[in-house]
Amino acid sequence: MTVHFPFQNSYSALPDSFFARVAPTPVAAPRLIKLNRPLAVQLGLDPDMLETPEGAEILAGKTVPAGADPIAMAYAGHQFGQFVPQLGDGRAILLGEVIDTEGVRRDIQLKGSGPTPFSRRGDGRAALGPVLREYIVSEAMFALGIPTTRSLAAVVTGEHVIRETALPGAVLTRVAASHIRVGTFQFFAVRRDTDAIRRLADHVIARHYPDLLHAERPYHALLASVVARQAELVARWLLVGFIHGVMNTDNSSISGETIDYGPCAFMDAYNPAQVFSSIDEMGRYAYANQPRIGLWNLTRLAECLLPLFSDDQEKAVAEAQDILGAFSETFSDAYQAGLRKKIGLFTERDGDDALIQDLLDAMARNQADFTLTFRKLGDAAGDPAADDARAQFMDPAAFDEWAKRWHERTALEPQTATERQAAMNAVNPMFIPRNHRVEAVIQAAVNDDNYAPFEELVKVLAKPYQDQPDYAAYADPPLPDQRVLQTFCGT
Image 1 (cartoon, rainbow, N blue to C red):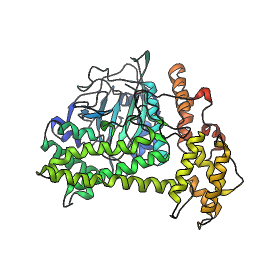
Image 2: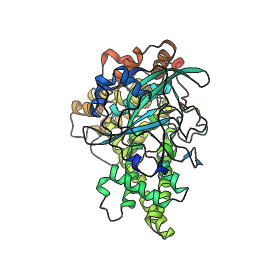
Image 3: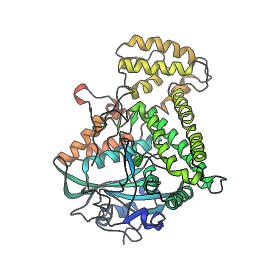
C-alpha cells in the first residue's frame, strides 16, 4: 500500500513563465521527527501511512508521490527596500495542491528540498534549527487564531548542510492557502508582462476571492480585499507581540496568511522599537513599524495592478491611492478593537483609546512583559486584589495609577467580573513561543538529537489560552542570562 496524495494542481497549469519544473533532490537517510497528524487528516491524507519509511521519503523529497507536479515558483521582491527582479523558490518545491476536508485548496510544499533554477548559487537545503523554528512558531500562530501557513511535517535528511558550521539537514513540509506573494506580481510587472499579471490576478481571484468573480471592477476589488486582509493580519500580529522580522514583498502573502518564519520572534518586555532579526540593522521591520511596512508592500502590489485598472495612468494611480487609503482605518479599527478586548472593554466610550495608550506607555517605561501583563490583567479583572499584573512593572506605582482608572472604566461595563476575566483570557494568551524556549529546543535537537523538549513545547503551545498548571514555567519570561537578543534567517 502506498501513500496517496489527492493532488488537483492548478498553479502548474499556468504558463511556463510562472515557475520552473524541478524535482526535489534525493537525500541520504530521511527520518521523520514530527508529523502533524490532525493537519494530515484535514488534508485528506493518511497519517499512519505518512509515518512509514515510505512517507518519510516523500516528506523529505526522496520520492515524488503520484499525481505531484513539482515546481519552483517564480517571483521578485523588495528586500529591505531594495528591489531584486528575480528571486523565486530557491530552496522550496511545490509538490502540488489538495482540496482539504473543508473544501479549501491548499499547497503542499517541501522547504529545504534542494537547489532550483532560482537558488542563486545556494545549496537549496535547510538546517534543522530553522525547520524546527518554523514548525513551532507557525503552529503556535495557528493555535493563537492568526492566519498562517502551517507545518505538516519535519524530517531530518541524514546529511549535513554548511552554514557557519556543519549542521544537520532537514526538510519542512509547509501547507498554505497558496504561496502567491506580492513579489509574484512584481516578477511580471518588472517585465511589463501585462497579460501574465492579468492571468495571475484572475487565478488569485478564483482561488482566494471567488466572491469577486462577478464584480464590476474585479481588479480594483482584488486590491481592496488584499489590503483589508493584510491590515487585519498585521493588527493581529501586534496584539500578540509578534515581530515578523523580514517583511519583504516576497514574504507578503496575497491570501492574507503569515508566511516565511525566518528571524521572527515574540516580544518579552514591551518595546515598540523592538528588533530581533540580525539582518535588520536599521530597524525597518521593528514591531511598531509593521503597519507602515504592510502598507508599503501593498503599494508595490497596487503599482503592479495599475495596467489592469485603466489605460489612463493618472486615473489608475488615483484609483489605487483611494483603495490604499483604506488600510490605515482598517488596521486601526482592528487593532483598537483588539486592544479593548485585551483590557476587558466591550463597549466604546470616549477616552478608551487614551486609557489603552497610557497602559502601553507605562509598560514600555517599566519593561513590563507584554504577554503576562495582559494575561494577569484578567486576574485583576476577576479579583482587584490580584497583583500579578502589577508585579510586571519596575515601578508598581505606575500600574496602580492606571489600574484605578481602569477599574472605574470597567465598572461601567455590563459584564460581571467573572465574565470579564473569561473573555480577557480568551484573547490574552498565557503561552507564546518564548525565544529562549525555542532556542533551547533547537539546541537539544541539534546537539543531542533530543526531540523531547520540542514535543513538549509544541504540546504546550497548542493550547495557548489555557492555564496548564503542569507547564506553568513555559509562561515565564527569560532570566537575564536566558535572553535571546538576535534571531537569524535560515539561509
